[in-house]
Length: 104
Length: 164
Image (cartoon, rainbow over all chains, first blue to last red; front, side, top):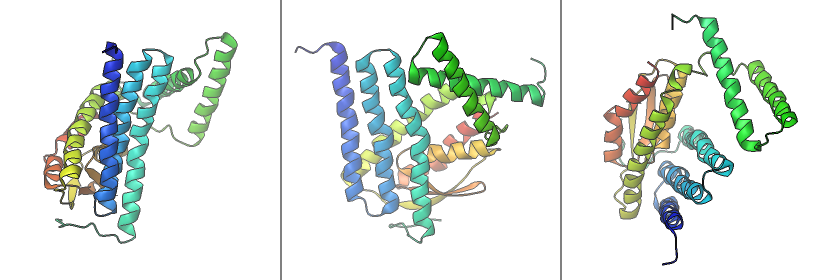
């Protein structure tokens, strides 16, 4: 093994992030309706991008660059729920009913 | 600190906003020359003036009290996101999802708190806030376990305590 420790951690975190993105993409195809698919997209937004940016921060070392990288998840945290909520609200108001049993 | 009056609190929140904007400018640019820092102050002042004109600097939108508690809250939120993310991933792979609609009551007092709670619900994978009606949320959850986790009211309490 010719990897050093930091590269090893980076590889593991990248693999975890890729796994979450793969699961989210699978969910986008597999899940039954609009509302469920938003969950899959949310999985990509939070955990997928989160782990990949974390891996990049560790790989680049602590510098101004890593602070800039840290801004990406901060903006995603504020914007991704708003987009998800906007899609869900519009689907709800235009009369889409969620599939599955509904409990009020 | 004695009982702070309204104006001093407002000034304090203006100063905090200014510092946040300037730190943001510095992270994005990375310049340390005096002339460029001066230009940075000018552009930050311009943004400050614009947000003041747009009335984005009301008392509600810059709650100073919670800024110190925010890092702890974010660590807690990341933990929640990770936990429900694992659950959602497992649901996607094994296909045992049963989507359902539930209603959740929010107990936050101001608008920022309610928006914070709705965003936190949407941010954790597996639950999405569909509609906010005053203090009652319509939430779509991917499985029974995720909706029961939400109905234990833990998240509601943590976000209400943020603003105490």
